[in-house]
Length: 104
Image (cartoon, rainbow, N blue to C red):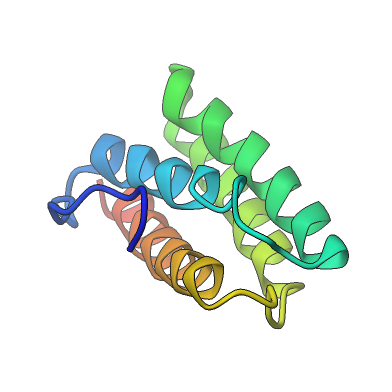
């Protein structure tokens, strides 16, 4: 995957997961993504950036991760294979982060 970290985040480390979600979504910015997909991904990326940078309570993190998950569920395809891979990875990481946020 272009632009994403090659190391896997620890599935129990919420901070690593939040950073990885943001990195995956940010990696789509320079790819030729369809306009409607770009809108959803851009909004999810902004929320993910806030999650990665801010010191928030677990309940707020869980709520905002749910928002990221909802936004990403609106994207069917991006029109670009590399962006689709980043999107799929971000969706998977978001699910893992939600699990980590409620189990910690």
